[in-house]
Length: 636
Image 1: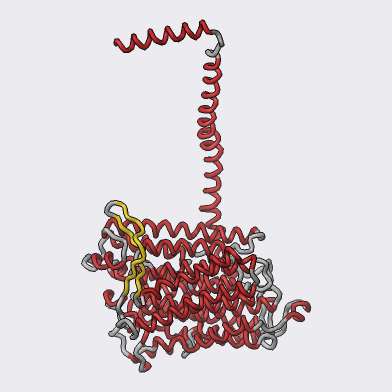
Image 2: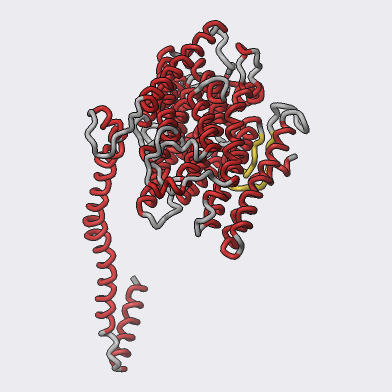
């Protein structure tokens, strides 16, 4: 069993090496087979290991530590390279390899005509390797290696079409903003070692469990870790990179910015649940930031017209719900929503890719319409994903979002109310997107209409599989009120038991729980009806860019001018300061000092050269004088 876990990240790494070294010399078909095949093998091994963990070779709930080699040893500091296998890491293995494999298969059709087909698959495989390393490591340092690795791959994939300078800027933006968060994560790791004398999870959590609640050092650690999570998981204020990251190919949006990479911050906090439970102030901050991000990003999605930008802000909003779950103690609920979100959001992005593929690259939903009859499979699967993300029962999104809202209600009624408001806004902008894309008259060009066709099977089969998962995925967490046992909660309980978690708080009665569900669902249905009435029945089409609209809509359409604010407050002052440092410190101080040293050596060399006269008499005289001086100083 132990060797299997070691092989899981190894196969994607081998795929990266083979494609990276020999991709130009082999056919695209073979590149696709290697890229997809290596991830599929990891998926099979993950399923086999998962089956062993829940009742095959290992008792359910046990953790397994696999020592690979001694990595860093310096004085009292020791960081072995180990893998930790427990229910949480094993569950994320299934998500990463499962969704990753489907997106790899989809990419074979989507990227088939791209001349850099081999480079794309090399980057995808490298990303899968680093993501697996992130969740398999048994210490914060190993997690950090995977953390930085997926950041690198994100940069490479966002800027994949590097001949477009705007895409390069988007890649740089993602890389830089992630580095800001990563600094907080790194400082948190250092403080963990200073406080606990170790960076391995088990040793840290064993010591932390004896700490009193609200100790300042624990609060500092958790807030620093949260800074890292806000960068990787696109929370306010470090969220603006993710919408711009839509510059990458659509499979990249689905894999990195919907299903896996952006959930790394969720995994990190869920893994550190003991520390956060000991820091109620930090949990309040996590919940508050998550809730504000969920509402803030959802409102921006109301007026976006780029199909991928709408989904990007939807991702930011849904990540906010996950952080809300973490902040109110619903650790299982947050991981549950990670799972269901991976299903329906990957499906939405891949469905959007199918639409863009049919529209010859067009992404503006105002130029679409009536695609239902041209793309029947894409239409049906996209419809399922839209229902799922809106939280309509019994689709997957309903159960996971309801669990988070249930915890939020007992934690703070206001949190529940705002969470429901976010769900209402989500349902409206998602069905706005759905109606404008697939219903009404086609609003594109004749050339685009002539090109409309359903995507090939390599693209539609992953859509169908994800659609099925979006329908049935929520059944792993059926609450007790519906006669379920919440299987996922039972499976993850060994990881979260020290935080005294419950599927839903005991003080909530079943009648109240059902009432909250009904209120939320009715509110969402009302929102869906409003979108249908305004965009389908009344046939309202969003105004063109540049057309005057009311100030509130204009502000939201321009994303609250957040990028402009960052540009004015941070980017321009830093650029100005850098320019001044260059002109004053670099050129006038450092360069002059270096040049002075060089010029001084040149001048002294020129003067010393004059001593070489070529006259033997002068040399004898200088030698005698030197001997006399040496003897004189020796006597002194």
